Image 1 (cartoon, rainbow, N blue to C red):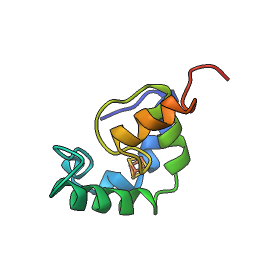
Image 2 (image 1 turned 90 degrees about the vertical axis):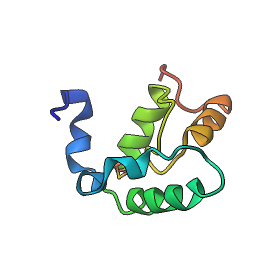
Image 3 (image 1 turned 135 degrees about the vertical axis):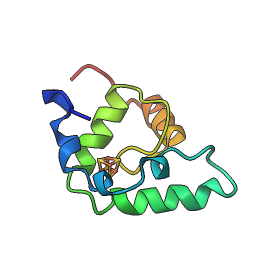
Image 4 (image 1 turned 30 degrees about the vertical axis):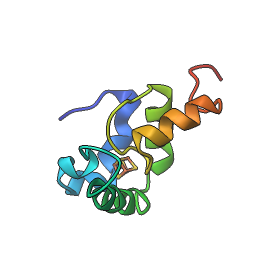
Amino acid sequence: MSVGPRMNWRERGACRFEDPELFFPLGESGLSLLQIEQARAVCHRCPVLRECRTWALRNRECDGVWGGMTAKERRAAAGRGFGGRGR
Ligand code: SF4
């Protein structure tokens, strides 16, 4: 998949060598927790974690693990004022 210039960071993501489904658990509890931890481990060794997390927060990405954060964690961060579109 090609990405636009604003998402060039994705081409350097550690997840490009992983099964994309790893980053989209069916839920955030039970057996999905193991999958989330596996995805998070990839994110935590990713050179573009910061860019990915910022993008997901700013774009209110509502599904999947991005930048080591689940959708629930991103919603909580947004509620605390992170991830706004303004600067
Ligand atoms: S932080 Fe995680 S989801 Fe984002 S590019 Fe890196 S490995 Fe992929």
